[in-house]
Image (tube, rainbow, N blue to C red; front, side, top):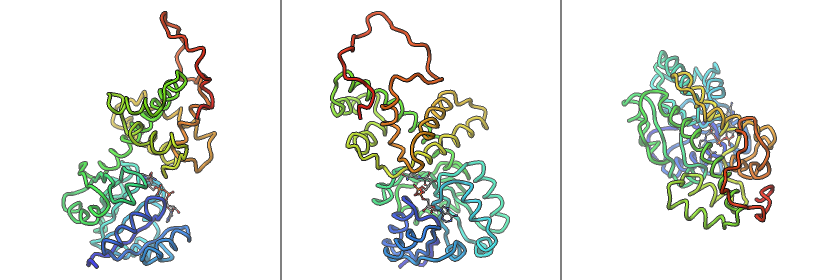
Length: 318
Ligand code: NAD
């Protein structure tokens, strides 16, 4: 058992396996989630499940794995939680939050002697279970050094820069990832409609310049097998895309393709179930293949285009 006590708030798809790893590494973990069944699962992992956020906040290091900045600010802004955060406590926000709000929050907490490090992650539920997350960290050197032993239990720590830099990189990464996944899905559907075996196509692309996390992870593991079960919700992906676009605008970079990707993902989110996995986007794109979108340019038929009139219909091919 290590001497550092950890409060863990947010025991969802990511938070629970992360808290379980900390417990196995010998940390005393006091955890809270609004959902009772999440608290029961923490107790089954050997953690100390508490009934309110303030009880979890009475710890040396308080890890947050919550949906977004709004929830993070709500939890930390509660009077009982604020009272439980002693001077010298270090808050580590591992949620994918908004970088500018994170900076403002760090300023407020700092006035009371409470530190804040932003440490969002990439690697999904599997990475959380296996301790192979990429953890992108923003904050002061002193605070990061303090958080590093805990974070090292969960994955590989990469320093992004000052406060908010981790959250900025995370959102920008997800805007890239979502945009890759859209074009990858369109290309995979087109290849299949042309008669190419999707596994063959993925193998070729993964040895070529079109490869990405969409071709070497999402398509082979969650889309081709038909599970659509990566554990990362589509609504959370859309939230991250919007954070990235807002950040881009705030620093004077117009997110042109980013805004286009957001409007496409938003149209899918409007039709899909509220808890749809983000990999459902591939099936949604297949179901809507051939339908023009407002962002689509006029169709052209260049001379020499291959005749694929005998190819299988592209609608509903997944
Ligand atoms: P999730 O919805 O599964 O979990 C969030 C948890 O927070 C839920 O259990 C919910 O009950 C709890 N919660 C909400 N409001 C609360 C409150 N006021 N007090 C206490 N608990 C509260 O989400 P997730 O997939 O675990 O994602 C968490 C964060 O990690 C998000 O910011 C997400 O964008 C990010 N993320 C997720 C993945 C993934 O693969 N799922 C990967 C990387 C980053």
